[in-house]
Image (cartoon, rainbow, N blue to C red; front, side, top):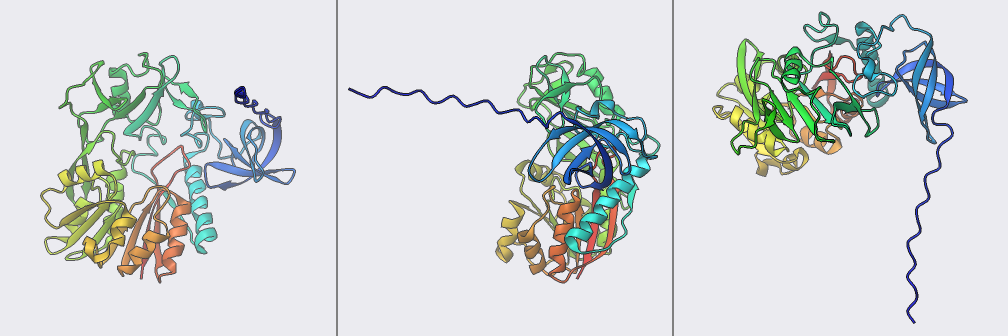
Length: 430
């Protein structure tokens, strides 16, 4: 007789960690990369959010592990002089991610980010460097709010627009987003973003260019206008951006769901900083890596003039499509579609040979050793590195140092107030 089939054993429910939820009293130490401060509990490292160095807090354990624990400060017993009432209470303990420094005075936020940049350079690049993080134009007047020209939301189980809790899939319903520009807020009101009931789990993307061009709402990647989905095949899916740099104005057409700098002042500020860092580029060959929709490519083309070349490399198909449209009348621009490490690995056969200057703006993970080695093989006299992650930047600066490149300047830019994120532009010379 055939043997009877045994049903698969039922998985045992995970045993709740008795330490999670426990409240402990902690003396808070220095800031650390990632938006938290370091404390110790019985010799164990605890990364604590919503606090400041020098404070004494009651904290709730949110996660345990063999190497470290995580916790949220839920009561401040002794406050830092840099603590202020939260500019975004919904981003406080147990709330949404994306506003972890909302309790910190703006000047102290910048000192926090400068300290992280300094520490990462010391630890990963073996460099002692005084770092200053600068405010973006207009941020002090706005209190560090109202700067995002793009926001992403998701609908909760009842269809209310909100954002996810920190390190969670749970959605917290919101009735506004204080980091959004006035134009984004107006778009949200016009489309009933906060009052309408959406399909649970729906993704909402709101885009309102700083130039004043027509804004756009996408719901699950579909354009939405005047309260309904626009499903026409030819429905507009792009927005118009304007960048003013070097005394010139450049126009861009960018997919609404594509990548563009979110801070209202970032495109002008970063493009200007990069051009200043490149210096006199007339007739030069400039390699623009991770070039996106051409934010730097277009002004670099003006900088090199008709006798120079700008070779742009980008791995995202949609971004390259935008870049072709934005640089269509610039014969000195060459666009290459493909992963940067692969395109550079093709050498001269790929048309990406020796360069006078390399500009790169990699994703948060940085360029990495393979790309750095490929850059060094092209013997540029200068490398201009735009970074959004201090650790990745410091690691890659260390790699470049191994090829004989020295860090000659570093500019920190606070393009993400109320968060721990910071943008940096590093210049390295051979």
